[in-house]
Amino acid sequence: QQQVKQSPQSLIVQKGGISIINCAYENTAFDYFPWYQQFPGKGPALLIAIRPDVSEKKEGRFTISFNKSAKQFSLHIMDSQPGDSATYFCAASVSGGYNKLIFGAGTRLAVHP
Amino acid sequence: DTAVSQTPKYLVTQMGNDKSIKCEQNLGHDTMYWYKQDSKKFLKIMFSYNNKELIINETVPNRFSPKSPDKAHLNLHINSLELGDSAVYFCASSQNQGNQPQHFGDGTRLSIL
Image: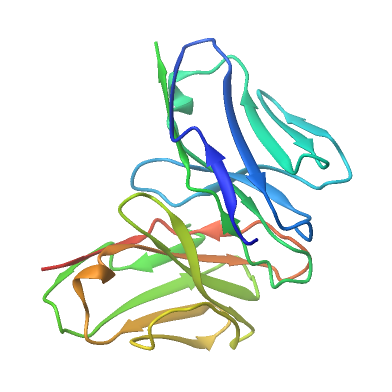
C-alpha cells in the first residue's frame, strides 16, 4: 500500500516534443504528490507538486495531471528541451506523516536535439 | 551558499570498516532526513529528525546510526560496512509543517571494496 509505481523506466523524446511520465498509488491517505528532478551527480530537486483537491497544476512547461478516482497522476513536459534530460521521480506523502516521501522508481528522460 | 551540504562527496573503504557522513543545512529548517539511492536509482528514506528528535526510522540495519547534535546538522555513522551498503546517500531538510518541499544535498557516493 505504500508503493508508488512509476512508468516508463526510460523515455526518449525529440526536442520540442511532449514528455509524459505516469505514476499510480494505492494508499488513499496520500494527499501530497510532488515531482522531483535529478541531474547526474546532484540531489533531487522539487519541480512541481499537487494536492488531490485539484485535477491539474501548471508551472511553465511542466504540468501535473491528477486523477483521484483512478489513483493516478502524471507529469507532462511540453516543448521538451535537451536541458530537461534528467531522471524524474514522482512521490507521495500523507499530511501529518512527518513529511515522509514515498518515491517512485524514477524515469530517465533523454531529449534529443 | 550551499543550502544542504554533505561531506565527503566520495567515500571508498573496505568491508568491515566504520565510516561517517556529515550533513549541514543553512536553510533554518527544523527537519532533516537521510535517504539511500541504490544502483538502480531507487530512492528510499532511512531516517528523519525533527528538532534533534528521531521521528522516522525505517527498517534499516542497526549498523546505521544517525546523530543530530543540533537541528542544522544530521550525521550518519555506519558500522561494519558491507558490500550491500554501496550506494549514494542523500541528506535533505525541510520545515515540518504540512508537506513542505524537501531540499536535498548532492549526495555521498559510498563504495565498499
